[in-house]
Length: 315
Length: 292
Image 1 (cartoon, rainbow over the protein chains, first blue to last red):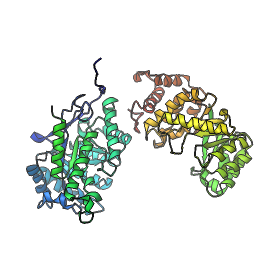
Image 2 (cartoon, each protein chain N blue to C red):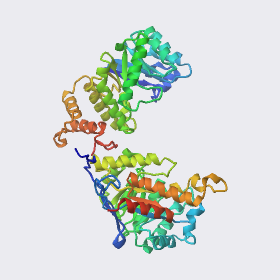
Image 3 (cartoon, chains in turn purple, green):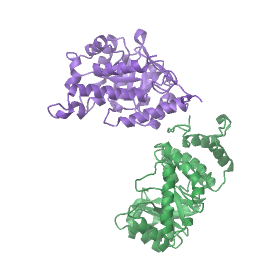
């Protein structure tokens, strides 16, 4: 008797979500199998990478991360353009670091004005990420939603504590929301239900499961994302059939193992190579767990991951 | 089904302070209320009781026995407190609980014979919580063996497979069912019990009874002998007393693989059917599990 390769029986499919608008809009999701299991199902849209731009010059980035963006880190518009023109970014994620109440605490109006400038200057999809402070994000992201009407942004993070007010603004001005929960599959499902009850349509919702990098609990993130895809694809759990977005770069580049210099700890080796590899490997791991969009930083890490995506999706 | 009332607990906002202040009023009021609500046993949970636990447990037993004739389940991790309580129990007490902690097992098993008590055998091993049904089976075998060596008959042992919250790890809930389906064959003369409310830990308070009731109904399929419960949940008590045969039938048919047409069910049946799906791992739990 000939050997037959066992196949997973899939009963569900990830919903398709279109990000941005116009020629450069990007569609994600649509998978009918586990990530890259092209021998079992389809992955009609390959995972995408959004390049990260800060709305204020980064203070704690290691040299290796700053170097590719020399000269533009004080200008979010120039920075975003450089990502697109020089590094081929197909999406931008603007991190509203300056709004952090424990940091610069920049006002909603000021922050939203910067978002508008960036949104006007680029034609690829724009993700706008707050600071996960419910009150401040509510204020800032509501303003952003309003001023960027028609830009089809992705606004994040939308959490249980602020989902009503941010969700309502996103709904009113036709933006997509990233539903963010703390590494917990049950809470992720619950927030998707709540946003659905609020009226957020299925094609305007992506999930942020909260991720970390290698060495800092990525196994937990992996398990939760894996479990999410199992429920979505094999248990017909339609409240989990949404594309997943991973805000991974800022987690990778903040850790000691990336920041420490070779002089301080010679056995750690070249810090540039170390940071790039940790970002690439963390990102790739998350793609294997079911990530649809990665928010990444270093152009070389991005290049590595793009090559892997191309190989894994080659027909 | 033997119902052990869970409400006399040091964690309670009213009874905790009453215990510490040795104020009998609120404790006796609760004991009376639980007795009237139809409890078979009253659990007295004084927690770890590190300081003067013996004095507290003795006082608690005497305080409760002054207003209720029900047998008591003594719940503390302090062996000195446990013994002090056992000494003054008028009826055959239930020791809640004894697990396979190597350093304490011998002395605790000795209480069972010395005070002619029953014991809850908590399936918690030297390495903590069992990971699956097989490990629960191994712990049961170990515990029964050690108990038998100490002269304790299986009839005195109430095995607790450990209910872990549905929102934490569904595979543990499933392992609990699988184990319960084997226990009858493994040890036919053993009894069983479960800390029922644990299943809904982490669930919003007003929704917890729905999970607790369904979980009880499911465990009844495997002949659960007793459970530690909120005895003021009248629907739960009715279920336990076989007062809801149609619901039990529905739950058990679903556990056998039947997939009822949800649209044809009454609202009450729906509560149970949706909860069964969550507890069996067919649908992923979320706080809105009853609404979708």
